[in-house]
Length: 417
Picture 1 (cartoon, rainbow, N blue to C red):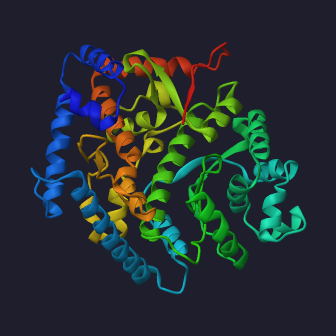
Picture 2: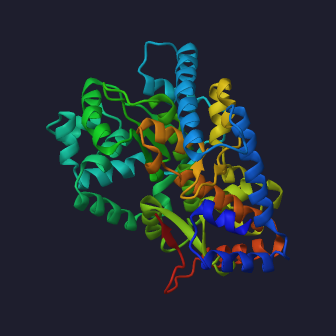
Picture 3: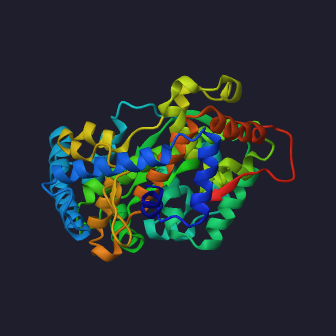
């Protein structure tokens, strides 16, 4: 079973096997890897049955085709549900944003103050963005456009040197430049934004931008040539980014007393912070730690997290559950984030985000995406071992040491792309 798990994850051997041995030893030989492999196999077979496929005689190509057909059908269901709930007058991306804003989930964020963001942008005028949006002056642009939508466009349109300069400016920020406010979804929709969608979305191949430092997600308009399953794909990516943004917010809120807060902010914006953990063969992503305490709230550590964060800050919503809440007819995707069918090459992912992206981009079987499935499965494996006190203590000890506000030569944080 360990070999099957290794192949599903596309893990490097023999380091993966050696790492599992260390986790097994630390957890008292609980066989968590074998249990997880068995559960994934059984749950995948049940999903194949729901799709009308033989769980014991279905090829990867057959499953892939069935998932593509399911995404196509579910995108139609979702679009009808959004139209029924919010009306047909607004553009699709606006209704997607409304659906996310209406979700009954905890949305508080530790976010950069708007005034600070405006000041930073004024020092690094995004000239390409101004030109693309049809403005001659910075002041005129900010009088007519929302600051965060301008940031989203700038991160997409400006040069690499501008992006580096903006990221470098974050190093000088402190926790005093942040405030507590709700997570927001913004959906610009004027004529010039629609015009930009034609070039930006077609070039970048997506229309959802996460602004971790601002506690926001921006959904750009769809181009006139709307991609397949665009509604479902945009909703899923926005829901995924909502988790990413809120986890980053919690991490920054937790680290607000560190003297290197600005450097940590830069790390968060550029990627995903990870804590060193020898028992986990290197490091563990902060997102995994947040997922763990969201699932096992009774194990919340006041001595580590308070007073800066509370239990509710460590929330994590299931993308599939949120999807089904918005459109109940899409409940097929419940509990599929860690499911995949093993094949002789790479697996076929049943993760709904992978499935939607595969269909939206019309990817052939050989080029299929599996990254969201693999990341979810790896996170689930780590969480299974974190449940054991000795493993949790090893990670908590690392976390506690890195929250020490005293400066050190090596802050111990890594960036995960």
